[in-house]
Image (cartoon, rainbow, N blue to C red; front, side):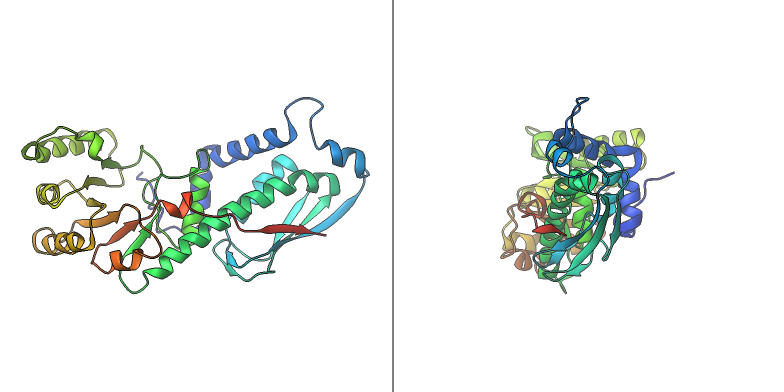
Length: 307
């Protein structure tokens, strides 16, 4: 059975797919161990000696600045690990645009457990909501152009699937999850290969890769000049051409040539894309704009726990 298209799934479906195999659970278990320790006498030492064992409480998870929400889907798994007797009742959903002061949900249960989970829960929602909010800014900037915004692999090590989920919450598209699910031929892969030999080399690579993994998402080739682009455009196995650090004039030239010679090939622009430049890039006619700063440039939103 072929792998699902992550960009057509609903957010709940996407989260379930990304959580398969326990990747998110393992990440949250690591977060638990780094905060509570793995020793027999680990735990929240302060709460254990400050809060009565039988104390129960409810707390409000509040957004302290406006933004797009992400990370609520991971809360049930987080509580399994940090606070198995606590419950979380969400007031909004991942992908919602919320104002400052919005109630995101109510966290209830044994007070000691809730306080054990507090910081990791707030960190997670704040980080992922920051990514979702930044993704939404880029998506909004190119509205009406027909271009889609994509995330990249410039993610926090270990947080890949959650940060890509967050990007989707903000309306961006998933480029590829990792090195395993698509072919992206970059400059280092073809360094020293003469231009005349590129078609044969890439065709064989694509054939071998698809023979090994038939459900690869795409075959994409990165180029950094119009000369390279002209050579790659004629390769039938190429689904997407990545135009790396092209100026806007060359982007428009590439679009015109693609429209005339290979209209089914998608063109993707990348390289130092900012909120100030993304609209002009999208207006050149490219189909896709990949933006690393959706993840590496995101700022965590301020999320708090109020009694």
